[in-house]
View: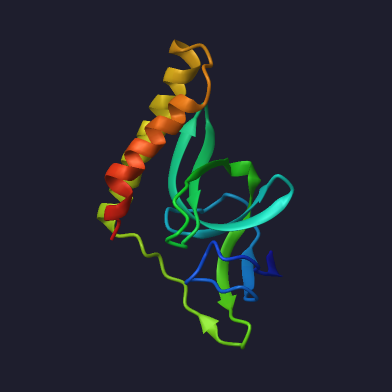
Length: 154
């Protein structure tokens, strides 16, 4: 089923400009790949970001998402059941169609596979070794990895 909605905000600049219409393949998390732009529900709001990683924990799929805006440096983890669908088309406010292409090279995808492994391991360390300690451990791991590798994405 295809849905459409209007995009507001600047988190996906320069790929998606405010006022653009997004066309969404609303099949949830099925068929989502690294590099796809998705719409997901976060605290009751629909958010549109790019998928930059994926991992499986206890047979549940989690995705790492980030906006394209270079000023936005945070990556968040979302569960697959929060994903509404994948963006399959973009029409700017002046009627022009924006081509969608997966901008991740094979090398960049491999880096995000490593990132997924690090997030998975940090989850298990936090949960089983540290007995559910605060999220600061995950934040330190995420910050270290992003500082070391994220700026090298092609």
